[in-house]
Amino acid sequence: MMAKIPKFKARPLNKKKIHSSQSHQWKSLHLTAPTSPVLKTSLRGRPPRIRSSKEMEKEELEKVPKFKARPLNKKIFESKGDLGMFCNTKRQVTVPQEFHFATDERILPPANVADELLFGKVLPLNSESQNDKTIPRNTTPNPFRLSTEERGAEKERKLFTELLHKQIEEEKSRIRKANPYPYTTDYPVIPPKPEQKKCTKPEPFQLESLVKHEQETWRHMEERCRMEEEEAKMSNFKAQPVLTE
Image: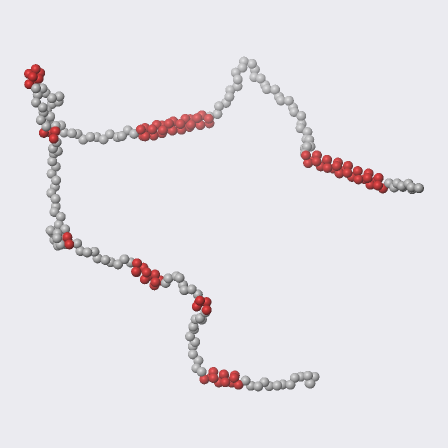
């Protein structure tokens, strides 16, 4: 047993571990600054298409129309009133004047002398003096007589009469009316009693399925009988004659 146990062999000392421990002892510790990892996917990825808020604000400011002052109107300085104000003269109130028609100035044709001698002085048809002008009265407007209103009123009247007739008919139909017994001088006839009918006897239903079932059973029985007869014929032994030369 002792011979099988392997002998202990110490491994050589690694000098790198000693140097590394000595070098770490002299270094001063400090907080590490976190840095974002540089990924290849971010390098080969496309730039973002969404515009930032600053870029959108710049575009809106560029689109705003710039203020442009209009040229000065020189007529402002040429006005008759105060400087920079138009002076519009106030117009006078219009005085109403009568209409001047040419018919008022027309002269009547001269009358014939012979007519004046025979019939006297010819007078106009309107013997009344034309100078007396009557004051016109205010016209009172009359309502228009439209055929559509008359048709509408007639239609409403017909509808009202139809509804009234329907209501009266419904009320009449609700009232019950008993049919009177026919007037006869004879005594009232007692109706005869009806004849007694025989009691109904139940009969089986004639179903096609039952008929088909019976036919099928008969067919199976016939086939079975035929098969039994054939089997009986086959079971009968018949000796064949011996043929002699």
